[in-house]
Length: 98
Image 1: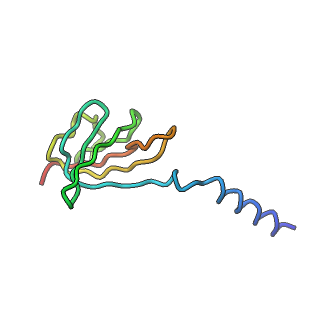
Image 2: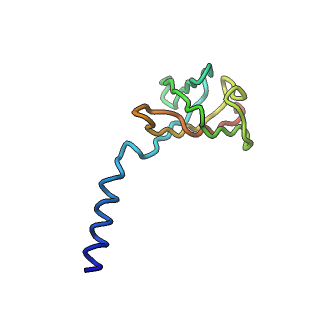
């Protein structure tokens, strides 16, 4: 009986965790920061714009920072998650341009 309960709990957990909740990352060179938006140019040269969650965890050169501390040319890794049906940046780890 305990084995059945354990299997049922695992099945419920698997069903309640959707792929949309998984984090997605993007890395590249910052091309612009404005309002709650950040644009990155990836290694292939494509530029993508992302909306930043107002509660995002932002690090610049290893220290907590505000979004405005990030400049064009800096290198950044963005972590995105779906929140409220929107894909938002929830973490930024940036460092000065190389």
